Length: 68
Length: 480
Image (cartoon, rainbow over all chains, first blue to last red; front, side, top):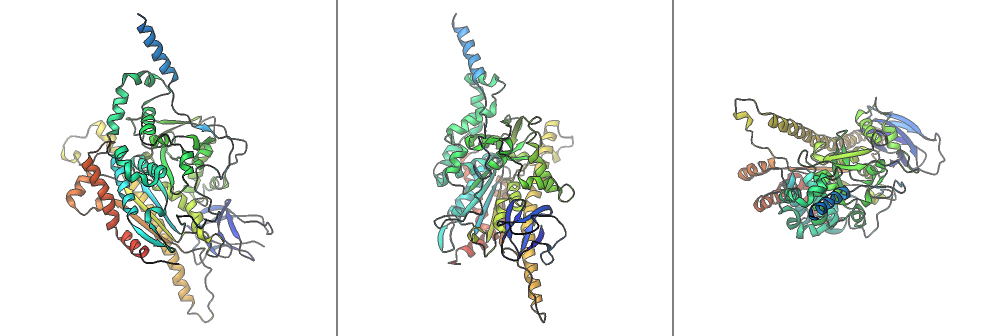
């Protein structure tokens, strides 16, 4: 499994491949590979979506994406 | 003189009218409707008797009546185990959330899903103590059925479906199963004969066939799951055109982009996507689920790994989320593996085994090896999760010793994964162990053998160190 942190100014549900999978600013455990990452409504963030390839991350050194 | 033409006409009518139960098309695609696990984003009501925080899944392996009785023994033991969880006292069986069944194990899974605790009153009489194999054989020999069996669209598996439907499952459909509530969620598994892939009887799978699972008799799914090669013919499903509302789910779309990054994920998505090729796959032919997974664990593994899996979704609910109650604290998988170890007669002979024996061994050796790896793969996944949480905690402790510590970002939630694997090999009594390991795979067993297997299911669970630890933990007055 791989590890991802989605940084955002507030707590918001994270959407991975169209499924709610945890919250922003926490370490999420996700299956290895390519995924689309977005946030739940309201759609007040940029970019609309990240495409990430999760490999070789660890819980202490997770992959990071940032929404503004 | 009139009798011959009359008989002929009757035969032709019976032949012409005989056809297998056809799955029905879906009138409207709705990714939240039908027989699928409840949505994790919907908060649990306060009067819900089954919590999500204690999340229990059972896997019932294949192995004919032996496997069905073993699974039944496990259910009995769970029923008799009283626990205290989040201030409520209940039986551990009341906390079971999903059951994945294969072949013989699918009878017990489906029966419990449809009738709940009634299973402890009449399942022995209605299934375990019956000579199902003999009854099927007599149906095939009955001249009344010959014209029907002569029809190209009616075969032995359809007689089996009728028998199960009438005498075991009371003609219940998946709509009936859904109406009982979706806990435990029952996943019956078969094998797609063309691709060799596991096929599960859930609406999520039927969405790809443009078909409504709700109208299908549960007996049909059980028949497919237990359609042992050569003895029974395949169950055929029609692959309908998709309704206009259907769009490929995003996780399948993304999965198809994973050939270079995660071949396992890509393969899963690719196999689902194949069902959308309606020109090449007009019909799906299904056989015994044991051909693709004789343990019943692959369905649970998918729901653990995949971003859209109902287990994964509940593992990822943040502690501070409004629907925290839907989040898992303890995740328990119990595998009832009724594998046997038939006597090795080939090693006693100096002549090479005959073709039939080689064919049988070739099929079962690969199944057993695959089953072993299936169990170990899931055990590794649980171990990995524990190690991840431990690593995080250890690192955080070390960081606290720094002059100006900055704690690590927390994991969404901490869970306790518990894996319990039951098989006859672990039985302590050597005589009974030998007897159990030599039981045949058939749909008929003596009452004594059924008793022994049921007893084994309960005792193996009771004596499992992981179960003992779980019981000790859950039998404390536990108000969190």
